[in-house]
Length: 276
Figure 1 (cartoon, rainbow, N blue to C red):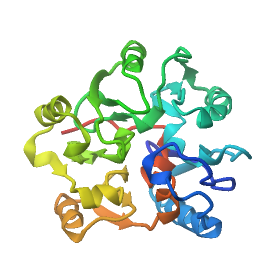
Figure 2 (figure 1 turned 90 degrees about the vertical axis):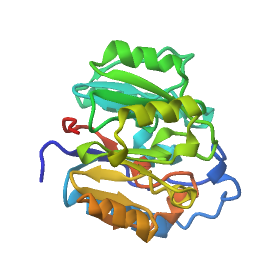
Figure 3 (figure 1 turned 120 degrees about the vertical axis):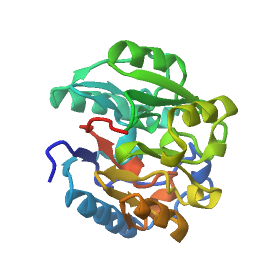
Figure 4 (figure 1 turned 180 degrees about the vertical axis):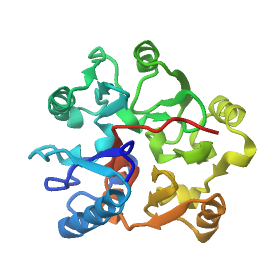
């Protein structure tokens, strides 16, 4: 097991779908199978634990979306920026998450109250270049990107989301080991697609269809050459395998009801170096 891989997860003890803050949640209030959600989460945790260190965040009553630790904040090196959520329903998570980062010894940087930023849902470190892909358009405001530039030794590449189904960039873009990139091009505006294609060579771009994107194939967890995802068509799995990845598909249907999947359920607390 690589000491460089440490991933934060939160058990779904209090996970529910009882409000609507993204299109996937609409119509799912009261439909959650809590035992199935627990079983699905445990399967993902076990798979990740086989190749990384899993750190657990203690679940809290009244915070149903705490399970989606990708939105706890953005971490790079010893520094963390806790999220400031756009939806008011998730703002009660903020003091708990900030206290957790501080207790873990991170150097915490806090955004102004008037700027929304949803952590590693909208800030993904590229695996082939020294930059972070930073999303905006729905749940993170572009004003947050300037603070990331000030606080981290990384170039910040702003990319704009235009499809409300893909409300965080981690639902439609996934940097992979070796500089490969899974992404769903129509989720981004023209200028953002052009910037992605300028920075990532064609041989390392893996465009994802609307069918696969709708099954949250881009919302994948990549650890070394392992990729964990909810579901993908055989053609996409074959493309990944041809590039040396081992793909593990794990049903996460109960979390899709809340608009999240494998990546949403994890936060990388450590990142390996980029290489392309």
